[in-house]
Length: 265
Image (cartoon, rainbow, N blue to C red; front, side, top):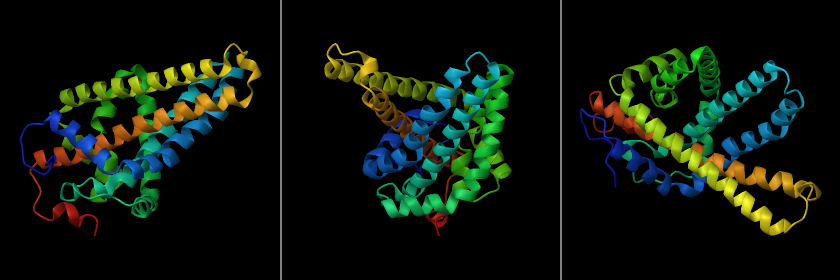
């Protein structure tokens, strides 16, 4: 079992990655259900509603900007919801604990008001950062990498969560950028695998039939597989953020025995 509460002055990405997959492995069933509800479902809704509209009015730059903003907002909000659902299983003193589905739902509902506020400000900040020159958006991604975890665990204000995340990630952002690139490549690989599954399956099912003649199968089946891939990628990203938060917190000065468990009282 990966020990995340050990005090160390250097961020160990290997320990963070091992901790991420250990956390997912312990709670795979519950995380899968929650990811389908709070990540895959909003993704599918956006794909079914916003994307067709954008394709119809694709000649207008504002429509593309609006679609990107909606996609960003949904990604941030659903990701923060998933973080809340994972929260109680991720602390160092609970590293052998499996979270139950009711407990996961309860944690999510308790955190909903604060998640809404944090998600709104995060979306605005990232949208402005990416719109300006892209690089500011990437910097904000690194600075705010553990903002949701900090807010949920330490019960700070929204601004306090941003400040706490900035403090925890300071002096580690080069490593965090490398970690983010690695996670991005993993997420891309997952999405490409889902595309391949869709293509191979439809090829076998259709066997020469025109794609336009298969009706809802040709529309909903690819969307279902893509949504599953999106949920898998989001699960890895959000579990990693929680493990990273505890690792960075231990680096900043360690935690007294019982401190991690006390935040859930």
